[in-house]
Image 1 (cartoon, rainbow, N blue to C red):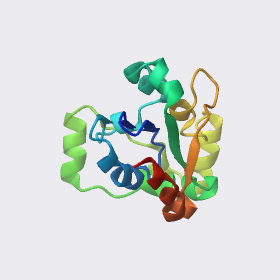
Image 2 (image 1 turned 135 degrees about the vertical axis):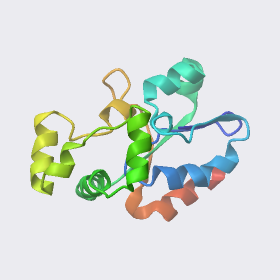
Image 3 (image 1 turned 45 degrees about the vertical axis):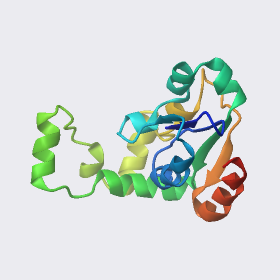
Length: 157
């Protein structure tokens, strides 16, 4: 999540869409605002952001969110969740109470997609970008056109 009060924009960061790269690109324009780099705070929901900055700012600021081809996004998610982690990182996560054995580790890609569909989690960003069940008016930065789409926001700097 990134908010610039000087430039009046909000980045609502989604998962597996180059959100960290986009945040790093826009962060220099946030000398007066809010920056969260720590997961899960970096993926604050639209509601949490609105509550943090107030409804007036939320309504008047440009809202930016990254998007990605859904197929590529789900492939990326699957490989992220099944990646090998060093044993020391597993122990640290366990001690912090963050250890979860993701079902993806025991499933094929197709099986995992069926599982996500069954539990209603195919749209992994629905809780992040929707506000009270409604999709706000966003400007989208497309993963597939990252550089071209980001150049558009130079005018806000």
